[in-house]
Image 1 (cartoon, rainbow, N blue to C red):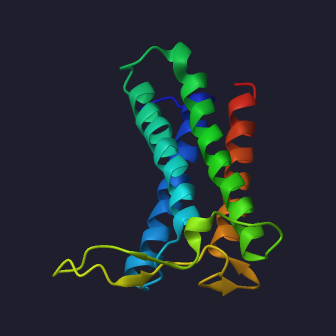
Image 2: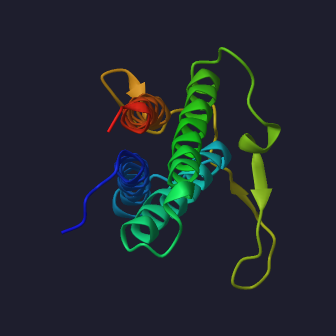
Length: 162
């Protein structure tokens, strides 16, 4: 039986939560049909990094394939990336509530080659319009809240005395 150190627990929590949040985003995109905007994509990249450092690093630590002394670093990086996605979620929610402006690429139309390469303009998913809300919060708002709660809980685990 593997004895779980606090750094492993923190890394696995951060990476596992990021995996769940990323899977949820993909369900909304492919299962429900809500296309992501540019800032939505920005929020996904830190979750991917948290999965790599958290789940990957936690698994390597548990299997004793990497030195135990880097466990704190792996967990810290996973926590940092989860918090970064949360910060991007706050930024995105602020753009949706029109508290500040978002990137210009998130409005208007763009073009991509179609089947016949006709270059007709297609709509771009707007960053300043929430495609879905529940209890007044958009997906960006939920990502921010959940990411910060997970980062805080993982940091607590990491800093807790064994």
